[in-house]
Image (cartoon, rainbow, N blue to C red; front, top):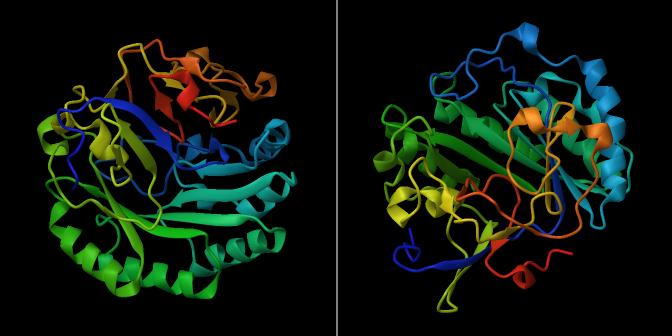
Length: 317
């Protein structure tokens, strides 16, 4: 890891994704119940009704049409591939839809993912597939082999494997890294958010990705493109407890213009992070047009957001 962030002030963190990202959480329910999951305990009865999602898709399509840029639609849960995603995405016909990104535990059949990839390719929509490896349910060997099989049968803009690092799972890290290297698959390890700051600040090799997520500029003008989100927010890099980046109410943020978050049918209606009870119906939401000053002391850097001390450095539009 390059630990350049220690002792040197960051003046901007620019997300390298130049599309507008709409992150749509379809459901909180998952068919896995991992011991470290922060969403654990959701029952199948809490799974969002598919007909409800089909109705919300019309408003998602409207937001995509409002965007001045092409749009990446990120679908997450729970487990989103429990739904017929081809049918759901067909209800979002906008020509501005440039990319679909989804995170999945890969528990559906290989054919499901290949078929979805082929459908998106037929529409000219790029496909980014993030495959979450949970060693409480699958072996690294069978999981990586399945990802490699899917990769060989369809076209993907990005296909990668993610896994959670904690004292119980870190014993699998070398095996996962070795298998991914053998199959030519990008990988990333995210620290378990249930662990304390000292654990999450470990200086481990946590990723090998072809697409660098951030361009980080420091006060002396130097630039680093290798830092991951986990590295930027951990306490070992001089950040806050509970792993958040220090903004101290002085950074501008592109939330709402480069990144929109929808929780089922409710959207965050500000460019700052707000509790869900302050969300508005997605039917009332509109894309923002300029960066806003952050009124919080710290930021989790969730989503495709960029932050900078100088508003002029945020050249998203």
